[in-house]
Image 1: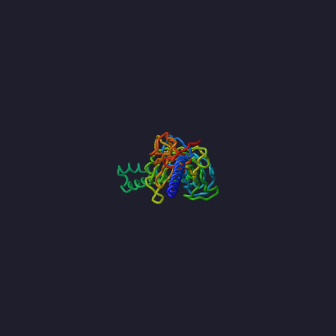
Image 2: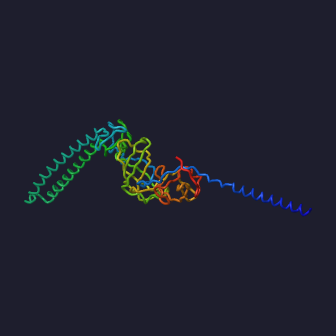
Length: 361
C-alpha cells in the first residue's frame, strides 16, 4: 500500500514538472524583442559653392579732405557768401573783408615806387655825368664816390618800393577769401560785420567725393589685409543700398590698447553718404573658392569638438568636423564632410551613433 502511494505521488510530481517546463517554453517562445523606434529628422544636402573669404567689421565714414579757411588780414568782414551745406569749387569767393585801408596802401606804395623810379633815373644821369668828368679829372674821387653811393641807394630804394607794392597788393588780394578746394561747407564760423584778425577761423570745408571709410580688423586678421582689396558696406540710412570701395591705406602698427589695426578705404560717393555715418563692412580677403556649406543650426558643440549627424541607409552617422567662415546662416566646413551628404538639420539633439532615423519634410 505504501509503495503504491509513493508511486502515484512520484508520477504526479513528474507530470506537474513537465507541465511547468512546457508552459515556460511556450511563454519564452511568445516573448518578442521590441523594435527600435526611429527618430524623426529633417535633412539638407551639404552643398558646395564658390564664395569669397571675407572679414566683417564696423566702420565710420570720414571726409576725404577737410580744411579750415582763416582770415589772412585784419578787418571787418564785409560779406559772407556761403553757408553750411553750400557746394563750393576751388577758387570760389567765400567772403570779403573791407578793403578800403588796403586799397589806400596799394596806392601809397604805387606812389612811392614812382618816386623811387624818378630818383633812380636822376641819380643815374648824374652818375653818368660825374663818371665822364672823373675820367677827365674834372671832379674829385670823393665826388665820384658820393654819386656812386647815391646810385646804389636809389637802386635799393626802388627794389624796396617794389617789394612794398607787392606786399600791399597781396594784402588787398587777401581781403577776398576763396576756397582752397572743391567740396562742401561743413561749418560757417563768422558773419558779415564781425571784426576778424589774421588767423581767425571763418569756414570749414570738406571734400566728400570720394569719401573715406575707416575701420579696424582684429589682430588675428592683420595678415589677411592688403591695399587694393575690395570692400562692400551698408549704412542704416539706406539699408537697401550697397556701396563699394577699395582699401587705400593699411596702417603700419596695431593699436596697443585695442589690439586692432586701422584700415582706410576710398569710396565713390553719389552725394548720399555723409561723414560720421556708421557702416557695416565686409572686406573681401581673397578670390572665390569652392566651399562646402551646411546650416549653422546643424552643428553640435561638445567642449572643443564640433560635430554633425549625416544619414546613410536610414541610420545616423556621427561626423567630427572643422568649420571655417560663416556666410549668413550657413557655415563653411573645411574637414570631415563631403559635398552631397545628407546632414541632419532638425532633430539631431536626439541622435546617437547608429540610431535609426525617419526623414520627414
